[in-house]
Length: 94
Ligand SMILES: Cc1cc2nc3c(=O)[nH]c(=O)nc-3n(C[C@H](O)[C@H](O)[C@H](O)COP(=O)(O)OP(=O)(O)OC[C@H]3O[C@@H](n4cnc5c(N)ncnc54)[C@H](O)[C@@H]3O)c2cc1C
Image (tube, rainbow, N blue to C red; front, side, top):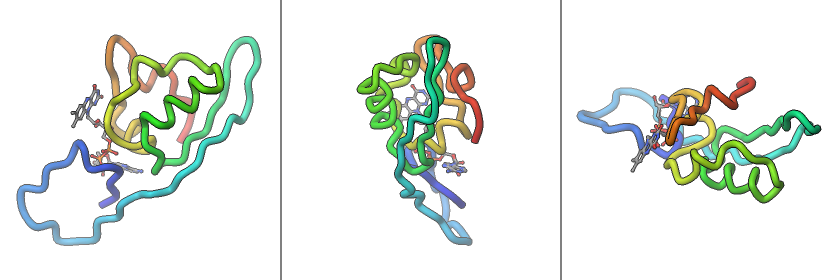
């Protein structure tokens, strides 16, 4: 089982297997122009830190999803959402 921060997981009994805690970090701006920006976040990045990095680079859109606990990788798996914005609205590829 791959986990990010474990913030959406409750173990109710012993888990028979290997639990992998993802700690792969990375942030990269791949492309931007007047219409869109394409940003890559590694799956083990803390989601909120990733949002802050986009804002630090004047790339807007994810701010409603700030402070959601967890990782970038889980954000796509879970389709995180808040305040009328969902990850699927900004997601490009995994
Ligand atoms: C206080 C609190 C507030 C929250 N508020 C919100 C909110 O406003 N909106 C919202 O949408 N959610 C919210 N959540 C839920 C939580 O933040 C999200 O579900 C988040 O995506 C969990 O991230 P995580 O890294 O902790 O995932 P985990 O809990 O570690 O994993 C969640 C699931 O995703 C899978 N997974 C994780 N990483 C990967 C990966 N790299 N590859 C494949 N599978 C993976 C796991 O196997 C598991 O099935 C909140 C949770 C808490 C505790």
